[in-house]
Image: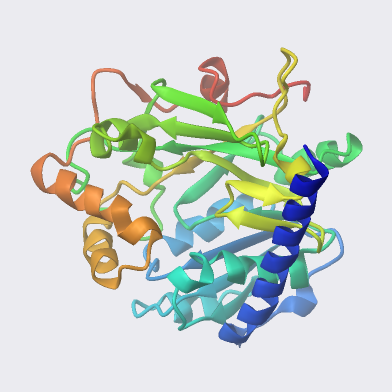
Length: 336
């Protein structure tokens, strides 16, 4: 990388940090319990809107993993999400009525909270429909993973977004509040993924899965990216660039081995494709607050109207993380 490119990346990082500092004014405290956060606590950061039905299981899942505190931005919900979160003793809650789109799809808000409250902590930044799975996650708490990462001075841990879906119509079986979503959405694509490397930011770019084959079959290059780096030992100099797909400094993106080995990695089981999606698509098409003119939701609307079934003969039923490792979707690397 040239001196000029390094300078440009440093400047971009500073601009994003300044932007996050300015956007802090859009966040209004709703229920802050920040005094509970201890020095070594593991934190979850999230932005959401109208996710009340998902919240009980989302919080329970991450509590069971060993997360200590949740820092959440609620963006104009009218379904009771704000009231429910405000009652949770391990949640610090902010509300934002400003544009999700103009906050870089919530990342300005996340970058500010990470800057202000995440420094020195292992921070997991996820959506309410994303569930972090890592090697041995069925028997070891998340602190076992972060302790191991600390031992080897690894600052970032990647996870591929794995779209989960039911067999049959997405809306055939209603999702109940508090239910494990993978009792319904228990299938995934085991192949048909493509990987490229971003030469500037050094991150991998992964696309494919059911969204590529079903919603973007004619334009696979426009399919959503599945590469994420959700778990980071945060420093106030860090900043997310585009969702959790990549960070600056760019060294945080080098979470893979180019010399034939494997570094540990996980998956984010993505529980988007459940019965609440139909209503969510209508809402987001009206709001037009998502990336590229809500292109993804336009594709959802068109496909779900005609054929709302993502299952195919190559679909794989989810068992556990070991299955994902065997399929090459995640790796325990040298963590035994």
